Length: 109
Length: 114
Image (cartoon, rainbow over all chains, first blue to last red; front, side):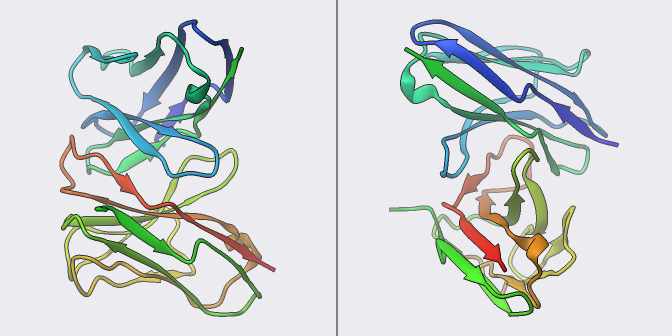
């Protein structure tokens, strides 16, 4: 079956750096997405990776290794507003999105 | 403001009742989706539509139906609600089904079936 694994919850300190990991096993691969979801709100798109390597967008970076079935989202200079759930999703060979359960990130002052 | 509008925002529904969740987008996106989100689980696809006039079943389609009469609207109907359909429902759209098209989500409908 298809599977996306990410930690359920992580805690980090304001101003620090945190890395949220995602491993996947899917039927084919057509890209990996990261979304941010604040409590009670809709998910919003953060990043897309289809080739191996690091994609940087301001304080957020996303890394992909297709051979290892692995990605991470790196958040730098953490702010309180970064407290949210972070969802990893992979497009399979049929271009269907397979979603992880999300990682709840708690930022402490 | 361009985006996706869902209605209602929340609803309490008696088991056995019929309910339609509305979804409208003004971005002229071809593809639309209905997901449910339950605590501890990833988003699960209920139904999707790659283009107006076509629909398909997702991972958890039982008890739900959809229609796509035009590009903008994609309503989701629960024919006879059951308590296990208590969930948060998100409608989403994307420009295409291609690899790099991100989903744009509505604000969700929180449904409680009693």
